[in-house]
Length: 283
Length: 234
Image (tube, rainbow over all chains, first blue to last red; front, side, top):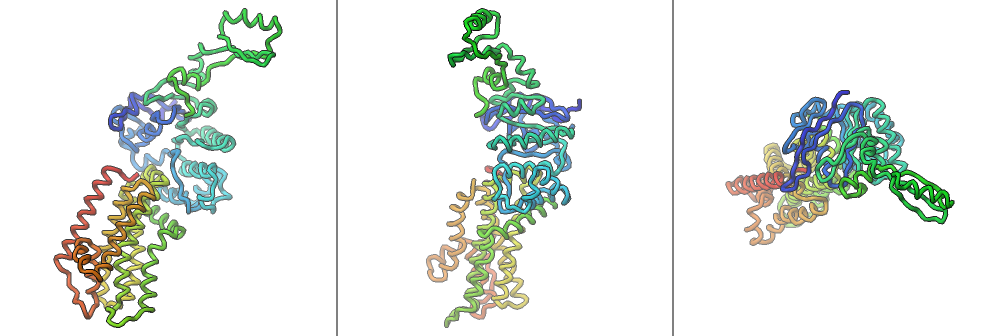
């Protein structure tokens, strides 16, 4: 499969602080690629380097076959960027907000209207952005990315701070874009989002890659964490390691009629990340 | 060019909905019209209010608008969105600067009409105003780039604006102030404007006028370069 983004040993420091250290990965065309890590892990810096907004100190980045140091205005049309803190013009309507960027990217009138329709804001096109809810503002920022119909979408924490229903809507929009063959580079610190959407994941911690692979594959690698979770009739819970030593204890619980339910607890991305870094993701 | 046009058009729409900025362009021209028509005092120089408010306009409108617009875009991260859409910092600054310049030229036209200048005087008046507007925009850009947000911008803009806008007026009534006010460009512009079309004060461009305005400009450029290098536009 075609490689659309390639990071090769990328390094970046701000002053004496090294924020990215030897970052290497490849993103295939049509993938939803997840960059998972806690706040301050270097996710946004990496996006800025890959989109040519920031120069790296070492290594290289390639996007659509072009070195990120050499991206031209024409190359920029090939990708759209939505950073989590991108603002919108409060006094301008949704339509006027998009119009500013439509002029920059040579997008015609119907491109603006299609983008508003795609994110469900066509009825709010004349509404000033200051009157939009947080979820609607996020959708407006997404519309700005969709409007140019880029092949690669960089989405930096697109659902951060949104209610589950709105987050789910945005997930569906991303999946619809993937269906069309678009490549999505998603940064998130939400484990469930990464598990639900991503075909491939890189876990970033303090500027270094802690782990990478397909989400299920990563979890399988850390299967030694698997436990048996038992709920007893007296209301208490207990956990046993998932091995032959637990068999006798489980058998005894069943024999005594104390066991109500039993489940295996497979490792998830959260527990894997904790094992690797000693940190929680949702911070 | 299309990037600059997009920012320019955005600014036109935005200003029409932004009373804080819009009033800066209107306040002094309207006050000048009212005062010129309503107040007549003996021994008052010709077109006193048109000239007075023209100088105050230069010290206030371009400076305040430039710093307010840049700092608001920084605070709300819309500037970042523009920069990540391949808009270059210089394209942004020139677009905003051109927009403010043109808006200020509308006000300048009002002052020119109120001053009842003839052909040559109009040209001299416009050139004098243009030099002041550009300098004030430069200082506004320095503050806008320096300030992290609108609140920080306002706290710096207010005293600076008061100096450039009000000191030339105060210097009319106080010789000590006048002596020290000579080092600021708005005082020199005030001196030049007071001489245009006046039967009492002869119009003359002195070396002092030229040197002070040029020196203010050079200091402004150096300040901008230093702060831009340190802070960048975002």
